[in-house]
Image 1 (tube, helix red, strand yellow):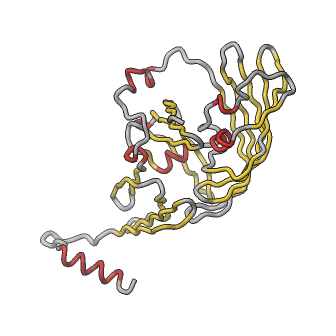
Image 2 (cartoon, one colour):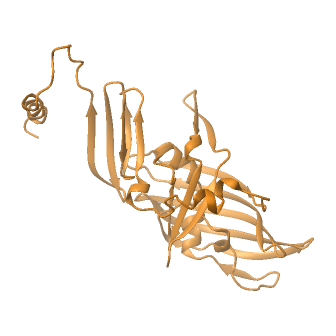
Length: 281
């Protein structure tokens, strides 16, 4: 199937959380608030045509419920009150932010018409994988659809997820509650044809690279999405490449000593240092 691009402008995108009595706040930079969600088959890719996202920005945007196109959650045919339908694997994968689903039994039901609004519900379980790590989920959702506007106006989801431990991330057992409201806007200059016509709206290899900036180490780089930063200190950083759950490689970035005014590092000395560091490895 052809790739479908959904262009979004986030006026606000931030999160606050507390871990081991420490408060954390993450936000999407002002110059990355224009985001494309490219969907192809089961997969969905977020990127900003304005430049590389950071890992934190990507994880902030790629949340459950945000990557599914509303029409995937609807039956796609006329139904009577009380009738049910089965959700496709693609809809469940994107609703739950999975990479793959092994089995799922999510069923939709047309519950009632109330004041001209169609009220639907979803319920079921799914087992799948995220980054090669197993995940078991149970979900319940309510959906409001305005038939006149042909618009999914309201979505409320409760998701219980039990995720296994991976090479780069902890496991967890968590219940998430998500609410989404949709309405037509009078105008959206940020995503007008004029604003986005000259931007790259297809996720080629360069658009999907992530930026890692080490404030402590004083360096910045871009990397493939399979690399994850495990540890960052003032003198070193450790990254691991995880491909479909498998640990493929590790990269250690170490800071050189501060050289004096007349000192410099020659290539021979650097190669000697590498040999010494690797020794018998």
